Image (cartoon, rainbow, N blue to C red; front, side, top):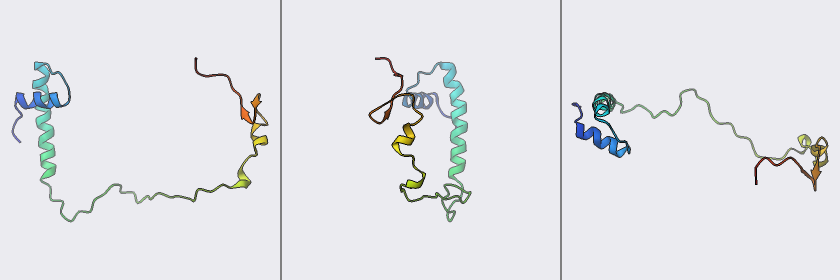
Length: 99
């Protein structure tokens, strides 16, 4: 790609909702041209026959059945046994939000 024009840089800035100063237009003209040239070089790579990749480690998700294991659960009484204050089976704490 050839160098971007001032109008093209201003258009990209407008799309990004940026107000660009003249000095920024010149700076971004060079930077955007470099970025677009790089993307263009990637687009020219021959990728036919290359499988898509989303990760390369071979790790897969391991899921388990969502089930209740009563042997490892606390009863409500046991759970509340260390609480300073309770009310109708719930923990009572100081308010953390202002009214």
